[in-house]
Image (cartoon, rainbow, N blue to C red; front, side, top):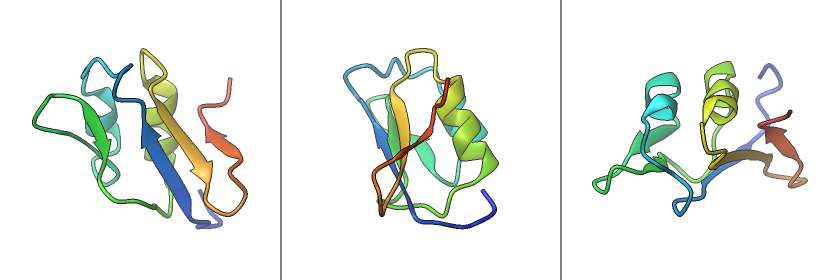
Length: 78
């Protein structure tokens, strides 16, 4: 993401199956917790192609990335 707007990353931990694709794709923004499910590394992110890709790759669509100011969905976009 070239404009470096603040983004909020959320994970629906009830949907997450712990595949690990997100943590391998965007390790600066997502990690697997002790329970094996994904969690954001920090409350807000500057965003990156990797983060967008991680949200789009999630096999159960558990990750969402939103613009912190507007709440608009940034990823996944289908």
